[in-house]
Length: 144
Image 1 (cartoon, rainbow, N blue to C red):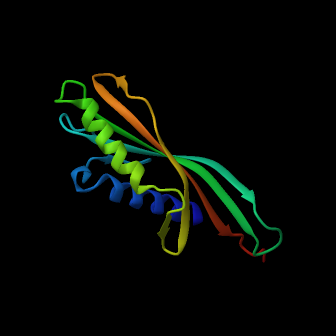
Image 2: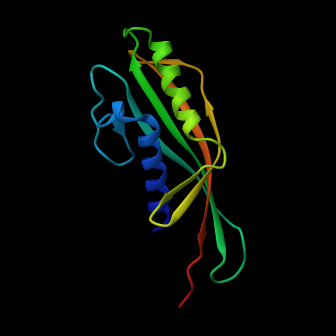
């Protein structure tokens, strides 16, 4: 259940960071999505690094780490794709400031850092990625 809550905290925060212009234009893992033919859209990928033991024993803590990658895409033939992409990337990176807590149903995820990739051409689109490194502590369940 903790993986679900971590995912939802990250997805909810990404949608908030991207803003209302991206409503219905965000692809998430495991959900069908058809990229729009015009305008910007985003794809979220949670690159989980796994859970390490943070404290020992029943009821101890596990530290889940990973990177949320937000790929922002615009058609290469649109007006000023570089400026549009970097504007979106700046806004998203500013939202995910180091130390910011992201919470869903009591599960808190903490942002460690956020970085922006180089622009690149993918098919007929320009793309930039914002990578958000995160950590989340979960309580290990008791063994019955």
